[in-house]
Image (cartoon, rainbow, N blue to C red):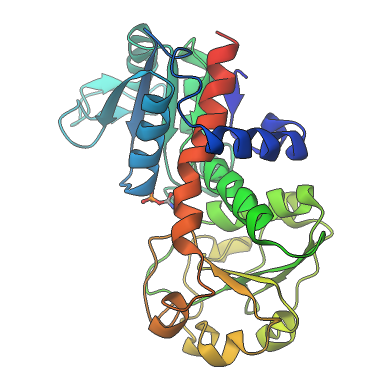
Length: 317
Ligand code: CP
């Protein structure tokens, strides 16, 4: 595997989940695979889970790991070509990327949407430059439009907990005080469609996601109707995608918060969220602390999804 940025890069999903569950049974079985290999993890944005789980996955595979927080201790990077660099950014990404490639065998990049330009965000300007200029296999640790390591972990979790071959999975928008990217819901939609689940999206008017990720998925604007009979409820906030409202918060309607009353509409569904989560905005204390909340096993599976991706990259070096 030379890159991992979207669901297509993982290939057959059944095979990927099977491999994940095998790796999970004995996570040190491939300890020699990464010997004398180095993973460089580059963060343009903050992280708790991705940083720890990916580092742990690499260590399970015997790799050395370097972590670079671009905004803490590195030179400020210019990302635009053609700019006269007379400002506060002394280094250009076009030199920095191949230099970073010299010091490692595999690169992971976290680079969120900036909401300055929808075109820049949706062309994955930063991630694509790493793929083009680093000379190394590159995987996304959440980019502007997708979070594939999270979605893969979500899929593994649903496969572990489901009691039906084709469960009903509901992605619901929930309120949040700040504008968040669409990467997690885009990616989740893409993976749920590929998995062939009974998948439904619910959100207030104005929060429609890009058709690139949701084509063919039913959108139900009444949250209660969408939740009826659900086996899994995946809550997430995102900002508006469509038109001039791109990146804007259009609603903070607390009636969309996932509460015990909302969960009572489901078929005793499991509650999922990628974390970090704002309690009593996205989900009530009672729901996230209930025995149907699987947010911790979901986060634990981040180590497993990262292991499968790194293993496949190491196997093709
Ligand atoms: N879910 C997730 O990616 O968490 P972090 O932002 O903490 O890495």
